[in-house]
Length: 399
Length: 81
Image 1 (tube, rainbow over the protein chains, first blue to last red):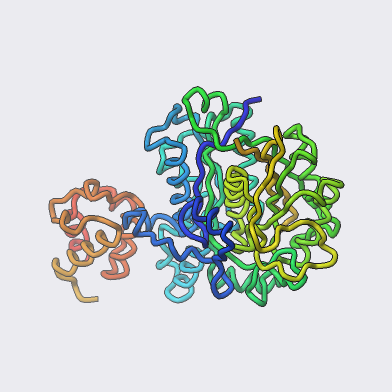
Image 2 (image 1 turned 90 degrees about the vertical axis):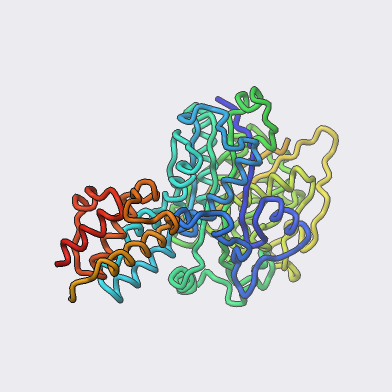
């Protein structure tokens, strides 16, 4: 099978516009959560889009377009595709899709009747709109589609793109995730299911954690066939070594208490990468700050990594930006690769009161150097788990 | 509904096209909609606005015949009488 490499990355998050901004600010210990939500306040659509482009895209699509432009520029594509357009795809995950568009049009329907529902409602709200926009804006004529698996969607999109390249369906894929669900309906719905933090604080693995903090944003990776990327002289940022996807088949919102499904996904990702638990030098946790996830994930890591779980540093990007839902897995893959490349372990912020039952090394509050022995490789796993029992784990090696 | 004047129709159409993202300085009676980057989705929105404003129902077959801004104004004026 073809090797799959990462040649470009882009991210827009509550810490700002740009993958480097995310990395640098998280390592510094900055938190992008304001008043209990992680908004992309630095993003102004007019800075990136014409009037027509902006009104043809829901915010979740706008965000992924911004991240995709950064990723392509980072990969050095600069407007020209290095491959036949028919061999380049776009696979973009989202948890919900254009919920802002749905709410606006539902209000128009109720207040003014069906003739006031916009002709743009369907093309803006559909969950595949992000993938469609990335394909159209960059002229990508290979496979493109959306991936919908709640908070695992970004990781599933990257895993699906990896398979597409491994099997030759595409030479390159823009893969990622996006979400813009800071809307009245989504907020009320997550409150109703008691998933959101009442305190408005994201503190994964802390004894006081009381739910997740909603965030918005997008992350995109440029994935390429390794041999083709090397042939064109591309700068290789990372190699996508493995992918594991499983399902709990258990409950709509709760993980299995022992983290069995998550553990199976981690094990599968390591098998896929042909690596052992001891090869992992960093875990980018799903780490939502919910009582159930952080407990089950800790058990999953112990189960899948065995004795090595106690030795490997683990941190949660969500402590700095909140939970980006369908974008989380992609943004966290970007953050993982940048951390590995910089040889730094970004911190889990807000972790001041350890939960006695959660006894792993969660890198509390301060970044630390990632020290590698001679010949030790910079390999991490990034975990993503979603409502519905979807588990997706990526195994990444920085080059 | 009182019969709209040509000026009223022109203003509604011009405002709509600007909202859609067309360059206001390029809009004139002779301007071709394609040159203003107006596509089928814009025309669907325009039809909705014209019905709301003037009670004129335009089908997609009707709007498919429109080539210029002037065509749109004349069609609405003819239907609104």
